[in-house]
Image (cartoon, rainbow over all chains, first blue to last red):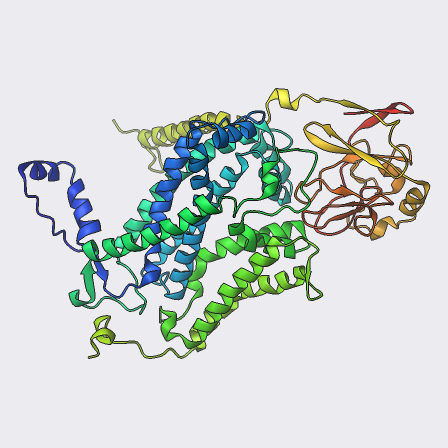
Length: 411
Length: 189
């Protein structure tokens, strides 16, 4: 889609700049004239929303870092000070903590949208893989950030996650010690996690740049999953999608604000209001909601190394989807079997999330949740392999429309 | 001037490889401090020890004390617990070695190898699965099936000799080097 540039510098200054640093040309081509399929629906607004989320987290985070102290004896009280004494500190911290949840909510919708419409298929494999990388960086950043308030969940969450590395044979213990800077999570760990929590968002911003760059080469996929055939199939990004994205962004901000102002601790855990205590593990230790499905997969396997491998594989398998899906058709709209299996998969992720949120010995209607999580984990991996390759080979897709314009114009 | 050898290698080839190798050594030499700075400092490495007064711990109860930043279990076992623990077949255990820092690494996980005095059990309080602190089981507050400890994080169960019996943890609770200073005082580390 990145055809020849249509930018024409008007003023003398624009001409001067265009020959030296063609920044106005770049902006003109990427946000003004960028030809976009004209059938993008609601589910395509989350890319813009995610950019907004990243900006909110960076701005609010920089402000919080001006008041926060990354020291195990001071961290908890400095967060209390932010909440009680710093002018509007409560607001900025609640924006940042709820912003993380909003960020993950938006990224999951964005990922499921890509999965449903086959946005990972050729020629968009790299956009998807860069997206998986962004998601990994997001989880790492969120994990480091969750440790900083130095509450009980911060401390024990950090202990459990860093202990994943001790599952690695021979060198695992040394890796964990290296990460901690001590023999357990402690002051050294907190200090370095703060440093990394400050660094990674800027790495994410850079990788988002690559994500958008890679997107603008083939152009957007669309709900029909068919290629743009003529200029009639597209509209310029501005004003059509800038206005649409802005409208839904406002709705998203309202949704976000409801949590910040009316339920700021909705996603929080009361145990994190207790300062970290290395001698007492909270009775029920749960990660943040956005990691619960992976946590359920980890807990469903009664072997330390295999559990940790399954947890890692559950995320890494996403990077291989472009080659696991053998179908020639992108969009699930024209894939009668895959459509259902997709919705089963979405439900499976929710069920796994529920299992992960419950205590380890919980039951529902007399059935142990660990067994439900085991079935859920089997479908989770089964969906990617062998379901994805096999359904692609055996499914008969519905006929595709001749062009993006055709179903609209009824020709 | 060309100084090519029989196989066609020139002086320039040699300089190219040599400077490249030197550059790699230089990069590694600079990288190491940046990696090693994350390891525990000598202050953290310095072995600290702790003394615990055990006179107030009644049979059937245990305490958790802090040692090297981590929890340490001290438990006063009842005669019934000792007898049950001694009756366990070591071959049936998930981890059949003692995991006792004072013993060879292949010592069997018998009850005698897990304690110095049978009524006093001392070990690390760090679950060998993912590092949580397991909850003690007492005759009045039973946790798990083996009367020792239950880790609420992921459901690992230990017996009264700290041996893993059920759940995802791979190893028995680690026993540090410790000694009895008197009948009522132990020194750990």
